[in-house]
Length: 178
Image (spheres, rainbow, N blue to C red):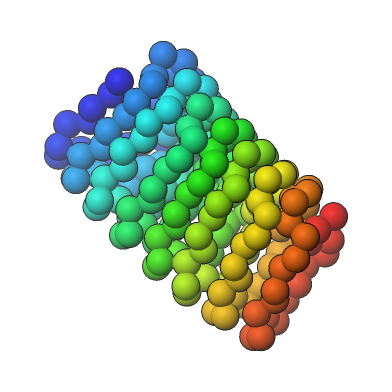
């Protein structure tokens, strides 16, 4: 267990990556930024309590954290970098902050057990391979604000049989279901 002291504003690049003994982390209200790879490959990390003040999560931050099942992202997070939850194979549900406008490339790539995702109301873009390999997602409500769905966004989403496309969508990438 790691309890970061109040006053720390940023969790640096790869700060706790590959720490196999890490089971739980609690970030204080002072943490605003989590840089790339900060907790990547912490295979036994189960509990993550993010700061209400966190605004930015970098790339690959929780990559391959195989024991995380649920996570609530605080409402002030407006950016979550590419591949941040990639290969979190036991992640079942996540609620994204309403101020996020983009789901970056590979954000949930390989999250095999993901069943429930609530997309932000102001979402404009779903990046490449964002939900690729999310085998247990049955439905996703695409918001009217959505303008772009990039290549392979829903590749290997075996249970996703129907998707209602919003009326103002301007770009659909290659093989979004292939």
